[in-house]
Image (cartoon, rainbow, N blue to C red; front, side, top):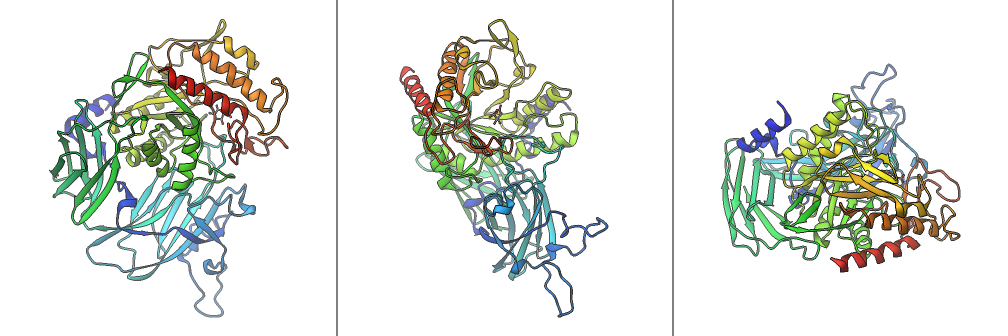
Length: 594
Ligand code: GCB
């Protein structure tokens, strides 16, 4: 079946298989408890806890968490006596020896439970990079691949009343057939990088829901129960909109509410308190309503043309280099973005933690959300496509109710090689099938040279709604001064976002604008690129690279980089560089000129 036929069928049949992912929506709002905190860890570069010396999987590996039963018994590991790692958190920044480590680390944690009959218990992980195998009380309950999206397992059958333990084998080895593949310009932070929770749910529960603005300006939604039968209540504060929704035998139902909500926008980020009630559970959420579409080269937010004044950022903590995960991290990172005068952020190059999206909702920042189909993934390999589609589906499942997200990005700087267009076309169709209410984009770096400039002619442009262009005039080619005269043409009547441009500078290093790594050089690149951008008539946004210096194994230059990509407008500790002020002034003028 072709993608477009499937989309039509999905829409006609309201098929739950097309929408709900099986992931529990809004896990933090469910009853249960957190497993965050110190976990015991064993570093296992040879996967000795998994394989025996014949490389056959152990029957009793480290996951069994075995203690000697008598003084003669040989057991060569002991979680209880092992060092601890904080969860959530990457391992690289917690122990000096683990800074460059790539491989397996076993995590173990004890917890107690008052197990009640008639309840379902799920263990939910915000993310583990890259592969996780999960065991409860020594029994394997599931595995997951992909470092930036949530997953869960029903562990009701494995849990005991009283003391329990959980073991996770986390493996961040890079492999050619992964998404991302072996080569990327960011740190491969390993471990249980986001929160872990035990969800304590009714036997029959509300698994997933969606609430959005319909084309006619009403509210439309759907619900998915864990199994068939029942009625869900939905209530939205401030709108006379309470509704009982009976589901079909598959536990699925669509509904509309005849309410006209105030619309979410950066100027007025209105969020409504929403309550879902089913089978004794009350699930609270905050949801905004807005519309995003394109018309020719324009992007329309709530029907009005909008220019996306943006900035790119990685998911790294405001101070120092480690994976960001908390609400405080999100507040500080996005607070800086707002101080810069943006109304838009590109959360590169993978799905960021959920706090970032909820904070963007609150702060009124539109979001470009992305999966790590980055550089040279194996486009002709069906299993690689399946991994990309899984990550896309998990991202959309988690974030579909966040008004801030206006763009799903399916790829970054992919080469025009065999299989690429088919792979990415399929992925775009999948994104539209799962969520027809947002725009699809990709960041492209394969433009053709033409006299005096560049021609946007990558065939992937015809697949996306908004074309992202990454181009580093003045850094990877040309002098800073040459950029202002660079001309851009496009073969497509579509909006273009300059999704990356920039230059490296060591904060505090000053000199001539012609001298690499100085703040002056970086500022000159910005100044000239902004002139160039002002001359692109179909430009509808930009997300310069990047808010803050970030760790990268590709950047070893001693004394300057020391394994930091220096293209930040802020240093790794948040000190402002000259280009920060230049871009802030530019955005202030742009906002006033609207
Ligand atoms: C790019 C990539 C980004 C890199 C950046 C750079 O084009 O998309 O991931 O970090 O360039 O600094 O070279």
